[in-house]
Length: 120
Image (cartoon, rainbow, N blue to C red):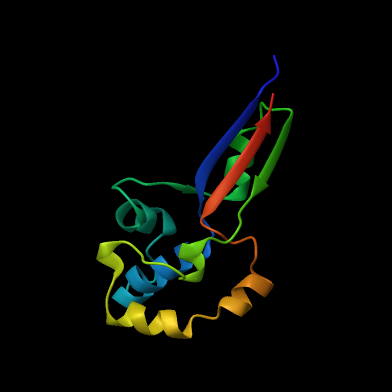
């Protein structure tokens, strides 16, 4: 009994998720594409999954206390290079115009990495 688990899973409702949906959903004239299918096909390796806060809480329901944070990272703020398949002119232009101040001010908990600390 006791112990601590520290886990990272992807946050379904992140800035990166929005960017991916804008490119591979709306930008591909398929706005009905689900975030689930977009993450599975375009985020990392095939089949990558992302979870909502509610889904994460359900996964860790057997723990006595759960802390979840979703801080902004370099991918959310477009402050570093991204994966090779996502590069191009449009991304270069978006990086110049990306509203980092707005995201930091109004969406500070919409990062891609959901950092979970769960206590048994």
